[in-house]
Image (cartoon, rainbow, N blue to C red; front, side, top):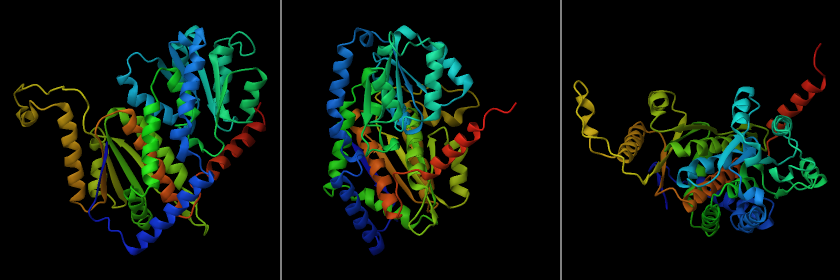
Amino acid sequence: MLYFEEDLNWQVTAEAKKLMQKAYEKLRQEKESKSVGYYTLGKDSLPLVQEVKEYQKNSEYLQNIECVVVVGIGGSSLGTKALHSIFKEKCPNCKDMLFLENPDEIDLSKKFARIKKEKTVFVIVSKSGNTVETISIFKKIIEVFNLDYKKDDKEKLIIVTDNDSNLHKFANYYNIKSYTIPSNVGGRFSVLSAVGVVPLTLAGFEISSVLQGASEMIDSFFAGEKENILKKAAFYVLHKKVYPMNVLFSYANCLEDFTKWYVQLWGESLGKLDTKGEHVGLTPIGHIGSVDQHSFLQLIIEGCRDKTVTFIKLENFEKRLKIPNIKLKFLEKTDFINGYTFNELIDGECEATKESIIQQNIPVDMITISKIDGENIGKLIAYYELLTSACGNMMDINPYNQPGVELGKRILVTKFSKGRKS
């Protein structure tokens, strides 16, 4: 279960109600017209899970792999990486996963050294099929591992991309196994498509429950049962000039990569020019509690009052690791926590931090996850995707494109197309 707790000061005004109704109708139209495809991925991707399992079952090579290497960046890797981080401790028999994202020579070299060619499948993920970082890393993999993609090493490669992209054409030309991303699903909304389903299923993670959880959240939203999403979006949009930043404090280390996924989803979707030509946006800030309390909480409490704060708390870590009843001379001030579990400590810190922020009249809300399982995480993913769409529509922007990013790509091409200086 997911539980939602909101600041009592989040009043639903007449203006907010109008925005909420408008956004709900817009999202409903997007779903019914199929112009936006992530709404149905929870159902649409279930057959894909079985398809990938069957493909692996029929391949002796894929049955014996030890590592799944995901080559992708941004929306092509962040969601998959988030799910891997969340579930890897709960799946000790699953395959190892490595993510080759950034063209950082040191990081790439270290990860290449860990890869055993004959025990690895490389999943190349690029929605456009032309992502320069991804294709450049792919080329280096071919060189480093002497990968014969034309003949003997085809089984070591899987392509995930848009239908008819250049990467898809490459896969078809060399008869390399490929899966396509629905054309109406944007990259940062694509984690529950082949982007995430294919590599996670190959690694042995049971992704069906995540898909089902996401589907349940979206169905309940369109049944009118999740007004809290619209209420939260309306508050953010109506107060965007006063509170342009949202701090997400996730109180569990396994949610660190989920928090990074949220930063991309929120930032790239909501930083746009609106229909009036004005620059708008809501700035995402991702932190992990309690670690980042020691680096950022002071700024929230006594710094500029330009932030809202969302807490994600894990109710049950499913461990019983206790703080021992050991008394250390000169350190008696910490004895108040002796005998409690670390679960109780981190939850107590989350609650205390939340209360301290509320006392400063800073807008706060909390999402409590009863436990880490596929259904809950699927719901959490869908919740943030719906919230992003609702905010974008209330702000009169297109939350699904990224023209600012495309400009940088064009500049990069221009710079390198001039050739290397002598």
